[in-house]
Image (cartoon, rainbow, N blue to C red; front, top):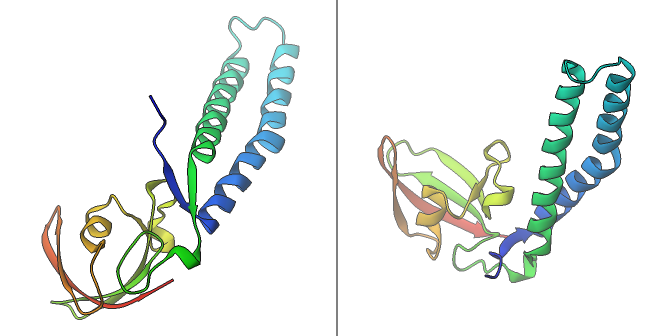
Length: 158
């Protein structure tokens, strides 16, 4: 069964590559040193430092494998791939809350690079999914846990 394609922006690709590099070059060495020190304490059968270090090692190796899998199945979208007429993956969208008249700007990204703090929302999130395919001026209703929010799309850019 083929792996699921992962769509990433160039910035998302760089971020994941940097994280993978850090895990391989820094975190692996740190945890190996922790394991070595824990073994020096003696009997590892009741050595909590050893158990903690081995658990961390397993976590790091699983994360490395997951990131390698994501990168292996990645399709990169560049700024040139982003249409500014319609909301698509990679679009920056300026929205106006129809009731509150507040403006908010989101970048629509794949789920692996979504980061609400950076205002990057997944195309699989309720807001991201509702915006896809719409144009400037469109009214979009988004069903969220607290009800329905109505947005007007004020702008689309790369």
